[in-house]
Image (cartoon, rainbow, N blue to C red; front, top):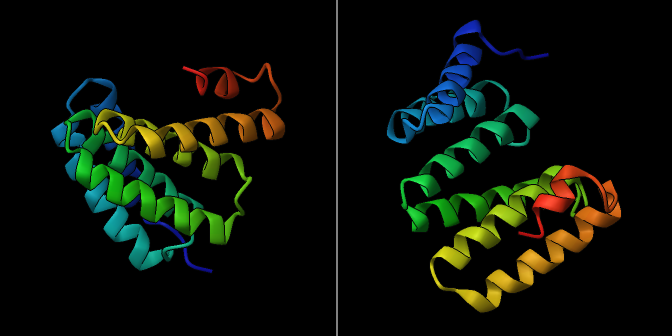
Length: 138
């Protein structure tokens, strides 16, 4: 079984730390390296690879690089649906983020559909009172 290197874990953790500090450009670079390394070592369908892609897309969105974030979120949702299933909580979280990114680009029709769908499915999967379900409504 393939495993992650210590450097890869450190890259991902660095990206998260930079993101939390609002240093989105630096976080983007760390996440890009993490995605590249995780795809090479773990493959494109591994949960940790999904995590790196999610945070990369999130960092792009925070920098208002919405087109690139949209592309990455779409790719991620498609990969997660195949690997985890359409109703997996991580897939639904990514769908929700895609919907928010679309909304920010004024693509309201598709955004509304994705946001409603992900919120309803999160409620079904996680329950009405789960924090992720509640936050998906806003």
